[in-house]
Length: 231
Image 1 (cartoon, rainbow, N blue to C red):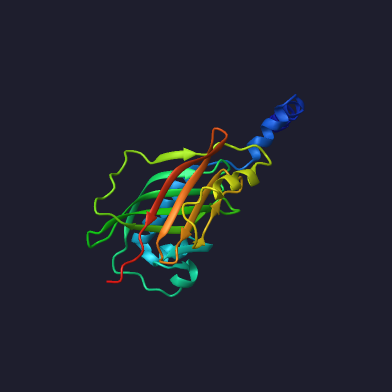
Image 2: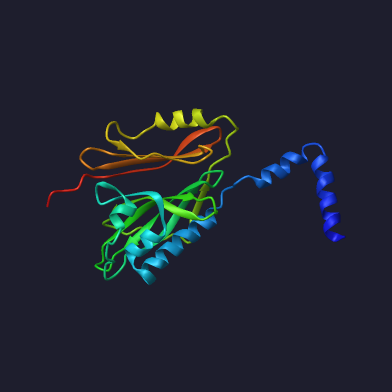
């Protein structure tokens, strides 16, 4: 009887003016940055428990790309690769998410056993089962370690109106950071998050992360990695 009463209430509410839209919104995918952070932390923990490249394989999207420094398909490059004796450690500092949660970007710090430190940027894509897998991973060394924040910062894009996807992609593509090279664009399902990433012929890398905020795409993060030196 209690279940029937609840269903009756929901049915009446669904017939009320405007409330049907409310319940349809509840069913739409939404941003869940805490789940992205949890995936990043589990990924980092797996690297320590199971081995660095084992963790990279386990958490990789089928189309994942990494830079060594040339861009490679991660699953091909990682296949059969032995784990290093000591895995790199890393911690997320900031997460940006699309409104629909289909795509997110994390940035944070890493440390190697030899004392080398640096930063990373990772793109996370949500699968049909709701789990996140990394789709693009890159980083570089830093002379001064990043200062750890008290809390992981979170930025979530606004939800664009329906039919805006093409317009938002045009805005983002017109703001690409460099001409020439190979692009690895990462776009959320609702086009509210756009990471345009280019690898120049000299293997330098340039990127810009944009979010939909207050009616337009705004710059959220940008960076570059210099071409590798021939030492």
